[in-house]
Picture (cartoon, rainbow, N blue to C red):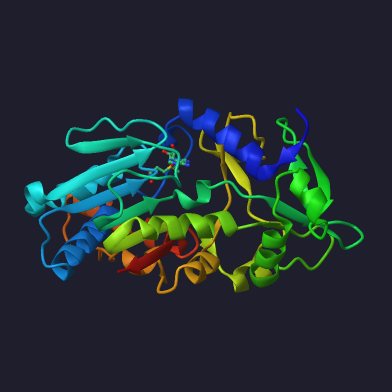
Length: 316
Ligand SMILES: C[S@@+](CC[C@H](N)C(=O)[O-])C[C@H]1O[C@@H](n2cnc3c(N)ncnc32)[C@H](O)[C@@H]1O
């Protein structure tokens, strides 16, 4: 295959990968009882704020097998028949009482905008993006990749026509990089987060009244400047971090520039998972479930790991 941009190679690879694979086969997400507790509390807050509307939709974008959505539903019994539970993914969700929508998002979704909560848990990092690298002469160039993962440097991002020939809008890339992730040294790389900005705006536009929540591994400008000179594009296969190859055999991911998403939709707040998930003090109970809860809370609140997952929130 002729080398193409990362966004194109990634999109094709993701379609093949997710047509066959379940998330649990390759990595663990933080979708769990304690996260569901917090999300259910947000659903109740929204329901109260909106005056208990006749119909409240709880929509999960990139819901996988619907596990998290069902955990939230178990905690929202009191909503009864007023609640609609909708799971959107590339594959059908097979859970009684959950409406399954098979769609590659962002796209038009029937019934939107909804009154209620639209959430996405570890979905934004799945949105394919392009990669730019600074070459030895200091020129920022689009990275092209073959389906074997071998990369070459493509057009300069200052060359609008050459970028257009590989499907890249150079003006958008320049504008995004300048503001959010300027490259400094030869070899520096960045993922262009602009498609994630648009995905977050799309998600929040699905909410007519209520709240949009997206949780994901993320970074902000100060972290990128200090830590991520070579980008964050990576891959998981069978539970292991591995070199990204866009051949459909592995899950491709890159952390989300959450500050640029937040700036794209005015009114967005950013918090960290460690502040959203309540602590579970040791000694609160001594049953096996209490001890499990204690350790689950520790994992979700560990600042160096799941505690650093960002929560984007927008209320209307
Ligand atoms: C990392 S898994 C997260 C699953 C679940 N939300 C969780 O936290 O366990 C990403 C999910 O997003 C889905 N997905 C990836 N790209 C998508 C797209 N463009 N539209 C809809 N779903 C997508 C995949 O099929 C997969 O189920």
